[in-house]
Length: 189
Image (cartoon, rainbow, N blue to C red):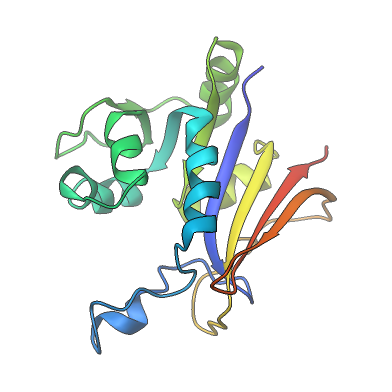
């Protein structure tokens, strides 16, 4: 059965909003943490190489459809532009993007059907509200956190709204040269 794999960039204190927002006004050339050093690029390449579908929330789709089709940031640009994208939304998409399909069925039902089909992992990238819903409903099999060495007191938290105690099994922790850590967890039922 296919796995649902959630991948999120986060600050050390759990904020998951785009960390670059602090740098855009002062110096747009500066990228916020985590920095995609060679180790981070290798880990991301391995992660997306195991996926043949991505589940996106509508807000992330609307943001990414304006950015990724012309981006040269590799390896993610080639991946996200070619992969099958399932967009959870109640309204029609206003901008086209290759291999994008609207999901209007309940997410749990849709994922159950998608998991039962032949294929590779199903990625969830960003899409914080969708990610929170999937975590709360117990629909995530694996969690990848790229933790940057920064504190962000104002950003949204990935686990806000997740009720109850959950045990996760750490499967790997990889430090990177830029001071980030890539954590991989298997979620237990």
